[in-house]
Length: 465
Image 1: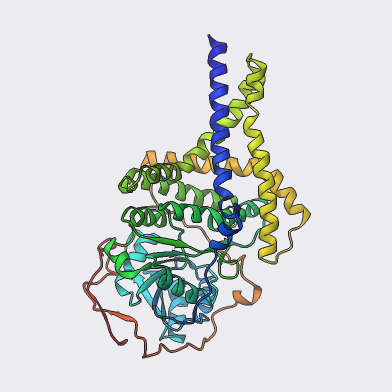
Image 2: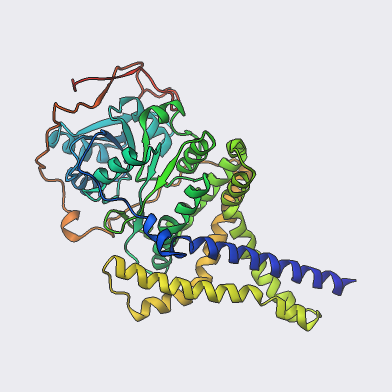
C-alpha cells in the first residue's frame, strides 16, 4: 500500500511539474513563434501627428539619488504636449528638495505634488496626483526610469491608430552583468515585456506593468484610480480594466524601452518579489477577474494570478519528488518518469541561452562566456529564491501584514554622466495652440484623508492657467 502511494505521488508530481514547465516555456516563446508575431510586437512608425497630451506621474520616495536623472531625461522628450507630476511624501525632505529644484528649473513642465497620507505607498501617491492631471492620457513613470525621448510620440500614434484604451510600453532591466542574479532578473523582464504580455493582451486579460503604462484619463478616473491597499496596484488596475472590456495594446521596441536596474541585493530582490506575489494574491482574492466575459479568459486569469504560488509549490515539490524517486522503492519506469520535468528544464535553459544572445544583440551589449556560465549555474538558486519569495508572501498574507517594502535604487543602470546632481535644464514651453485639459479643483487631494482614487472636480478643455 505504501509503495502504491509513493508511486502515485511520483507520477502525479512529475506530470504536474512537466505540465507547468511546458506551459511556462510555451508562453515565454510567444513573440518568437512566427516572424509575423514578432513583427506585431513592435511600435508602428509614427505619422508625425501629435494629437494627445500626457500627464506623467512620477512617485518618488527616498529617491533623491536617482530622481534628477529621471526628470532630466523626461525633459528631453520630443513630444510637445506633456507635463511631469513628481509626487513626494510630506515626510521625505531629501526627495522633495530635489523635486522642487527641478520644478523651479522647468516650471512649465514639472510640478510637485505632496502626498500627506500617514501610510505611504505607491498607489496612494498616484491617487493623490490623479485629480491634478491635465493631460488626456495619464502615464506612470518610476523614479529610477530612463525614458526614451521618442516614446510619447510612438504612444500617441498607437492610441490614435488602434483606438486603444491602454498602451503598455516595454520595461527592461539593463545591468545584467552586475551579479549572477541580476542576469536572470534581466532575462525575466525580457521574457515578460518582450513576449508574455503580448500573449496576455491578445487573450484580453493583462496584468499591467508597474510603469511605462498609459491610460486614457477619463477611463482611469471612472475606474477610481488605483487600489490604495494593494501591493500590486499595476496588476490590479489591469485586471479591473480588462474585466471592464478595456482594450490594451502592448508594444516593445529595444530602442524605446524604459530602462531600469535590478535590485542591488538578494534581500532587496526577495522583498520585491514578496510584495509582487502578495499583491497577486490580493488581486486573486478580490475576484474582479471573475467578471471577464469568457471562460478561457477567467482560466487564464486564475493561472496568471496564481503563478507565484505555482513557483512556491514547484520549489518545494522538485526536491521531494527527486528524493522519493531515487531512494524509495518504486518501479524503475516511475523513477524514469520523475526525470521528465528535467527535459523541459533543459529545453528552457537552451531557450534562455538563445534569448540572452538575442538580448545582447538587441541592446548592443557584449555577452561574455562567463555570463552563459552564470545563466546555467544560477538557475536552481534563482528558482529557490522565487519559491522563497512566494512562500514568504503567503505567510505575510496569512499574518495580515501588508506594509510596503520599498526597493532602494542606486542608479546602476545609468551612465556616469547621469549620476551628477541636478543642473539647470532649459524647458520647452507648452505651446498654446494645443492646450492640455485643465482640472477644475475640488477638495484637497493631498490631505491625509483624501479619497482613495476618487476623482475630484471636472475636466474641461482650455488654456493652461
